Image 1 (cartoon, helix red, strand yellow):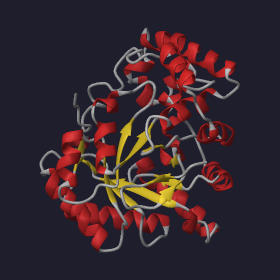
Image 2 (cartoon, rainbow, N blue to C red; image 1 turned 45 degrees about the horizontal axis):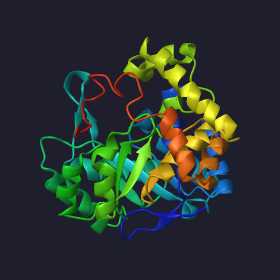
Image 3 (cartoon, rainbow, N blue to C red; image 1 turned 30 degrees about the vertical axis):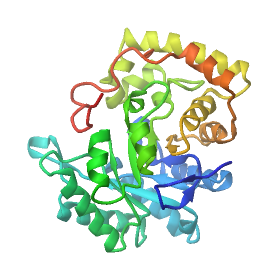
Length: 332
């Protein structure tokens, strides 16, 4: 397993991390014990990065991490911990964004309290606040580095042009973006800009919200999940088409005698040494399948075979609906 660097001058971490959005009920019911089991398995497999947010389950994800550290006092030193803030509850219940110095500092303090730690290793602005120039938002984040409450800073779902503007103010250790065989928009400049600037590209939803696994979520399960029920790729006729197409990928993985999720993770890792997938799961068995991708070497022929069964643009439906697109920056 070859470790990867989190930012230009940052520490080396495992090739994948734990996406802690699954530490609450976003993709179905879970428990604190299930989240702790994932962290136990991460330690066993050498996975050292945890990526969470203040809004995941209204703090439940961070609280699960905090209770784990309380029960395992030496575990914190073995993990590189990232969290995020910047999404706020706007007027009339609508989602808003706040990159002000006051909001970011206050939310980081709450996150540290929930996890029972005195600093995080990476703190992102979860979404860019359009009312604040990104240079100012970056300066606000940089104050938290000076305070010692975070070792580095990042942004989630920003465009390459915004990354360049932010990097002119302070080094951006990481940009988080959806990236997988199902969502390849980062190849339109973000992958390249991150590599040029020494910024890690932290890839969330690396197995396409289950489409790139041996067991995609059932229609029954999808119908009970608000996010996926309203997501274009999980609505028919798109869902039927996407399942039919990804059956080819599942067959290819079976022919290669590897879990489909491992093959999807391995493909991402082969797209650049600065790319760090953060798969999330409530299942230890599935986490082991995902982590197997860290040690899967793909040849040029393997990569060509993957591109043949899942060519660029294969997915039916946009990755977000109109409401879900509020916040992420589009670019081309």
